[in-house]
Image (cartoon, rainbow, N blue to C red; front, side, top):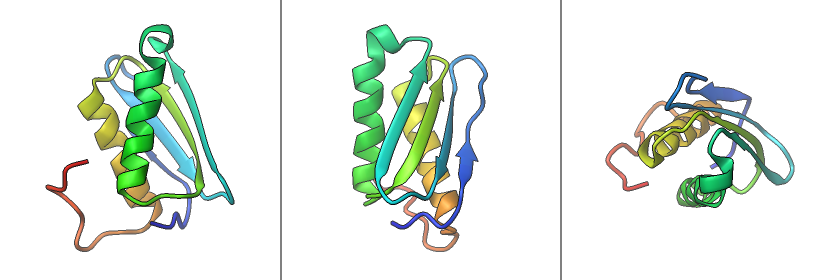
Length: 97
């Protein structure tokens, strides 16, 4: 999936995550989390898994996690990617991400 422009999903509220993305020539993922010491590797793995499933190969991703559950993080990444790709028809809802 190709990113057409910048997009954002989520908030900085407790138990949420804010995902900011923009198009780029390479793939870059930056994670800042209140639980990074305990769950940083799992957060990165979750983000990478969603990007792989959506076939995103390029882009700059900045994730600010406030202790979000895995399902919330997945939803935020997916939403930001769909917004940035201008996808509005035939959304992959129900697809296991």
